[in-house]
Length: 299
Image 1 (cartoon, rainbow, N blue to C red):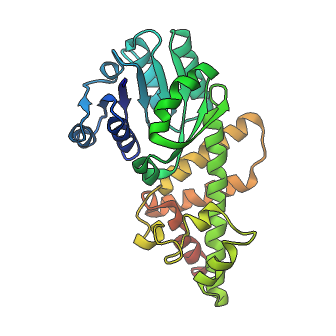
Image 2: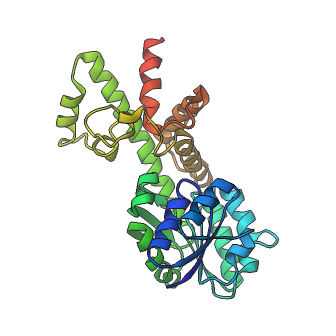
Image 3: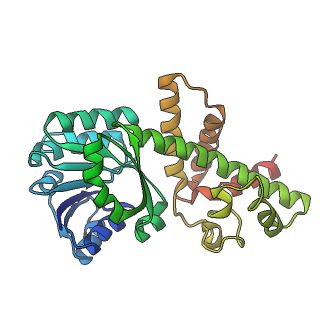
């Protein structure tokens, strides 16, 4: 079993760290939120006082951070992970951040003699708790092979997407599709309501026809067809609208950087921005069906 450091013990990182504990690893963790640290300690983890302390004397360090600026600060800042870690430490960043930051941090880590992968996730809080996350991994082949055993404890599907930053590229492309698909799925159910078509009937047909998607068959945005979807608990978040907006904006930033045309992705970002601005930032992203319904009714 390994000694592991874990920085970022929130809604996603907390369950991920607990799965490493359940697998028998010794894990010490750090978070700025005391309640998150306490939950981790109650599960058998050991608290560290700083990010640097978390990275000292471990075989691997995992981070789950909000944005690129946080990853840069935690890894490359004074007293940060890269400076504190022993030579050759494996670094796994599971944050969803911009591609440039991911590549810059990875280069700094490798230049300092460490191994690093960017390994953002898909699967939400439920996947983190169940250990069924999908990891999209960027980094050198040797670093990926070192990281894989740890990722397999926390996830079910582990995909090597290529070099440094490619995990982030895969994540933002995937979530741009997801955001757009959820919007049009919601639009279809609102249209069905107006046309007098029962939601269950639409689900029964489209779930086995060409309209099938994850947004429909796993995360259906209306109550009933998928009992586990947030629609059945008043859109209590599994993946917040704010998190979806963050990923859509990262996709637009990347598209602008490489001159890629993404008009549907841009429209999805605009709609989720409007939804978040309406006060729904912490609501599940599938709850955008409420805004779409109200937009037409209020016109």
